[in-house]
Amino acid sequence: MKIFGPLYCKVMQWCNHPQAEKILGGVSFIESSFFPIPTSLMLAPMVLATRDRAWWLASLATITSVLGGIFGYLIGYFLFDQLGQPILEIYGLQEKFITMKDWFDQYGVWLVLLAGLTPLPYKLFTITSGVLGLALLPFILASIAGRASQFFLVAGVLWWGGEKIQPVLNQWAEWIGWGVLALALAAYLLLR
Image (tube, rainbow, N blue to C red):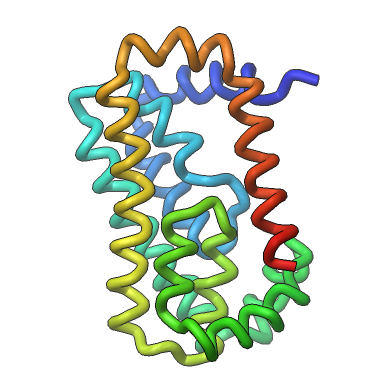
């Protein structure tokens, strides 16, 4: 079943849309609080399509992701029963939330940094941070560090590889997509 190859081709077409940067910012914002699709899946093709804007795109993704993370934090802090709990239920993360509360007692803000760096569901960490009342400034600083590290790494690799990487991605998009999905599943199982 081919999913990621056609999706990659579609996203490459979207990269040339006049509103592509606004869409990237919107996806990055909502991914941090409730949307399941990772920002890097849109960032990567956009960097390939417009390599001269790689650093701007990584900055845009970082800024909007951190703002979305703050939104997720506020959902957890003020609206957990009304919005946070239903979001966790949609993604089947209720048990993870209980585990997260224990982890936050031990590791606190370091978990936010880790979630920002990895394919772990960042939204779970933002909402949990709000529910538990994690100090906002350390939360924001850890979010900036984690999200910037992820997005600038993606942009840097694709900027550096550029035209050499494009044919590889075209050929291996399906395998890469399933590989990323397998890594996310492995991270999920480890969190269990």
